[in-house]
Length: 261
Length: 311
Image (cartoon, rainbow over all chains, first blue to last red; front, side, top):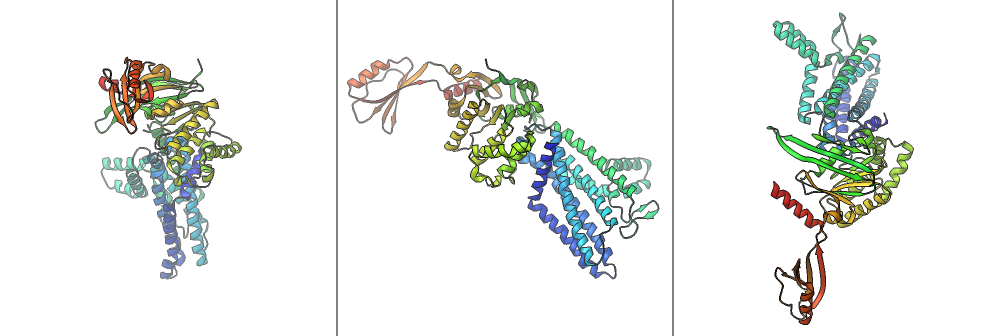
């Protein structure tokens, strides 16, 4: 456990000392703060706009950071040859991958908390609260980001950062559209429908983590009115964790067999 | 015979490169052992398979054939890795860390208790002469400083066997001497050192035994004194050029000018006494007489030539 903790802490420390991540975080904060100005352009919808734009900013930059760091997580160790120093230590390869992933999650969690705090401050300017619904929405976005990171790490265990980024982004876009793809399948022939359903089963259903506006149990969910309950939160989290662990184990298996020439 | 610390048994590695999966045999059945308390040199020209062999021993590359053991434990098991320290060739470390942070990380990976880590890191930083750079990030380190922190990290787990891949490459003469001295110090502490190199004078100064690898195949393993022939190859006689005359040369002798005079290279079997008598009778000023026996470089060049001829 100590070895995994050491790798995780080092990964977090690397992110904290990485200027690019600060730039991304700066733009995320900029978008969230700009929600204040955009909200003022609307008629009596300031709080609603701030919540929507704020969550959009957290979602967008969370995913960008997850893909950017996720695809580089293992590749950078190989490219900079730091892996030649670390892996000959009494450390198992899976421990290394798990430690890197946990460090990455810690980084993302801190960034999400920073963005959420900024959003709460912006809401406070309009005398609104960062309520339970908002906290639940941010939690779901965090699970979403965890899953995207795991997918990015999986691709980066066998391909270049460019290809890994491309695949991970593709997964994100398609994963967010799973209900639309299923609906499209309903309108097509049985073979096409089966293929689309199979694809939807393999690709992570990321729509689960952005439920605002979706119909769940015959009711429309919204962070402004009726948001998801604890059971939904729990099942979505379980799905995200399970999917992440499966792709992470696949990444470990691939990494375990690699020659570091 | 001393205890065997590391045993490589018919280690081989074949890579399949490119689109057409071209076979490249990097190492062909390397067999050698390293004994407790010795400095063992693994010699070979660039691209001969030295680094690939060491990477197989470190678990970075999987052998296509054969096996290796460290103190009876198979490589790359955790038990084996716990007893060795490794410095890779041209090492790269986490450049955003300071030496103390880096050694603390390495200590944690080697299961060194937290309380011991801090004290050991401080001691190793002093030992490799980096006290002045204690708080500086590694990105600001010179090549020589990186090599020294690399050796410190290899010692962080208090290993019995220290494996160094080309530790002298790119260092200036002072840096090379420091690394040589450090290796001999490790030996005095009772540790075993295995290092790869193609810098032969360093080997002659430090190694108890060597293995030579050419084009992936090991040619010689043993103590230097056993590998080098004791026979006289030639005798060099140097003269000051402004005094006396040099006598007639025996068959096979060569003369070349030096800044201070002349150097006569008498072949094996030449009558050196008779030549010197004749030189002194002609009032020539003999500066030195140097018998030349086979050096490691001669052996290395001979073996490399034989390998080329066989290929």
